[in-house]
Image (cartoon, rainbow, N blue to C red; front, side):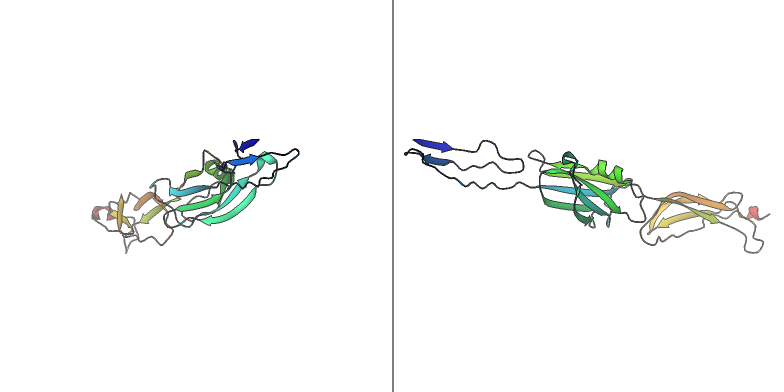
Length: 212
């Protein structure tokens, strides 16, 4: 007789075969062989590394991508190492079905490096038939620093109170600070930068009475 053969369920990670096979069996003990080829399915992931305060992308952060094999009690597989581009992005395609995570291996000096387990939990994702495209946004906290200015009399070396300074970083106005009784002005929690910070301090007011 005549028969129709169709695939009703594909193996995990493979596309369902659309071909319909028609077989005619007209003799006793007749054997019929069919060779089927299934296309493997792949997924992709996009990782965006951002500054936790500004939301801007962070360039030059290095990650290792691992395939999580904990379900089979095997050692996790290192896929490759990647570096964020000028927009803070990493785009990877051609990933087989399974569970994955990133490990941050290099963090720019201006940012605090996260713990390994923290990175794994924050970047874990799955590639399967319902999740072939993944987007991950992962933030870093910038390091903070304080800038202290000591204002003194050039002759007596006594502290000068009431001098006002303005701070500019990369030609962007940050704020003002006024020297106290000890002649100290402080700019607190200034974000560290990867490159040299250009600071310009301008004295607006000088309380000459503090010299007495």
